[in-house]
Image (tube, rainbow, N blue to C red; front, side, top):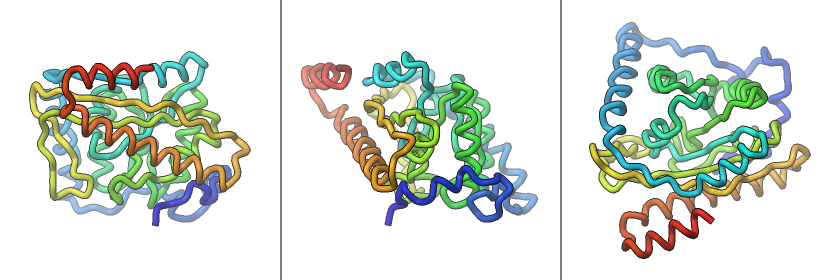
Length: 262
């Protein structure tokens, strides 16, 4: 069963040294061999993306939704599916976005990768250290920095949204903006839980950004659950739109682009 957004956000306001997994951001014990792999994998992933993504063409629809939030003087809480990580990492690079980053092995080399692309990190995940991570994200949002979640990470289930963004939105009065991306040509890692897509060189990418989701600071648990369902539906709408984009005829794309950019 998916997590519910109303699951005790008030715990985020407790003393940060409180015990329990939701505050535990200690690094796990790893063998010397695994520790040695972390910088190597992080560097390899950086150069893979740095080699491929400059050759790509990006078509970004719905940017006006995020811009409207910025024009109001607020930052944005972004949320997107884990399998579109590469397009997101490249498109939003060097903007100081703070991402929730797990402390497991994958999270440690991913931290090296994202920080080289100009992202900040808040350590935590839905399974360990999440509340401490949300506290850190709320601080960064108060400083005017955007935050972002790979919303079905770090280990799935695939395409099932975690409640973190709506919880953070209620705490900070910052809206959630979801998006998705797809490529016309990509390699799909079929054996991974998220079936991560790696764009091929000189491919095209479509990025669809949904209108913001506002969450009141005094939202009830029932309201939070509704907002969580709204976020899940928005993510699915973006995903289905992007997955169909490259099968549309040019006239149909023009119509879809005009509708999405309204």
